[in-house]
Length: 331
Image 1: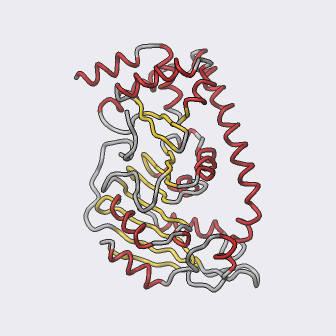
Image 2: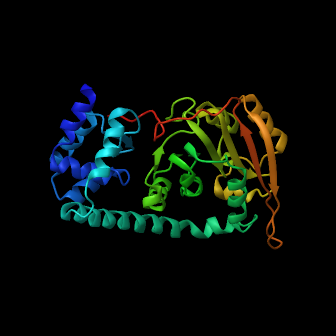
Image 3: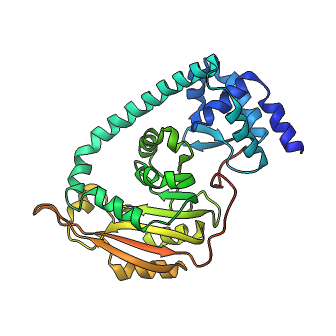
C-alpha cells in the first residue's frame, strides 16, 4: 500500500506527469527530455530522481549516457501504466511534448541513417553472398515460438530487425548489443508506436544484464561468427530462457571466404551442424529442427545460411508481468 501511495504522490505534479507520458513512448536521455520539456537539466533530473525513487521509472547507463523509461515490473510499474493511459492526449501541453518528441526521434533517425549509409556498401556486399535476407527472416518467423509471448530477446541486435519481426508477437522485447552505433540505429528503427514495448541495452553476450528464466524466445541472428566463444554465448542464452522457451540461431554454414575474416572481423568461417547441435545440448537445450538455406544468387553467392532451433525443457508458464526483468536498471 505504501509503495502505491508513494507512486501516486510522486506522479502528482504536472512536469512529472509529462515525463511519464513521454517515457511511456520509449526510452529517452536526460538531454532529450530537457529539449522536449524546455526545462533546465537540474530541474528535469530532480523530477526523474523522484520518479525513480518511487518505482515509476528505471534508469540505466550506456557509456556516458543515462537513459530512462517506465519501470519494468511490480505494482508501481502497473500504476505507471494506468496513469499514462489516463493522460489526455489532446491536452495542449501533452500534444506539444509529442511534437517535440517526434523532432528528437527524427534527429536520432538522421544520425542512424548516416551511419547506415556509411556502412551500407559493405553490408550489401556480404548480403549478396547468400540467400535474400527476407527468405532468412521468413524462415526465422516460421520456426519461432507459436502464439503470443510475454518476452523476447535479440542478442547482438544490430539494427533491431529481429525485434521488428518478433516484437509484435510479444508483450515486451529487449535487444542487447555492445556497439553504441548499432544501438542508436536500433533505437531509430524501433521508434514506432507498435514497438514502444521494445527497448535496447548495451550488454555483453557472455554476461547478459537479464535475470534467469525470463524470456520466451531468444534470437541470435548472424552473431555467432563474430564471437570468440560461441558456446559460452549459447549457454548464456539458455540461462535466460524460461522452461519451454525457444532459442533460434541463424548463421553461416562452413565456408572458405577468408576475406570475411580479414576485412569484416568474422572470427569464424561458419559452423557445422553437429558443432552447434553439441553446444545446444551442452547448454541443456533440446535440439529441434535445423534448416539450411543455400545461396540463390549468381556465381558470387557462396554462403549457405543455417537456422538451428532448440527448446528449454519444461512447460511454458503463463506470466502476468508486462516487461522483461533485467539487471542493471535502478529505480
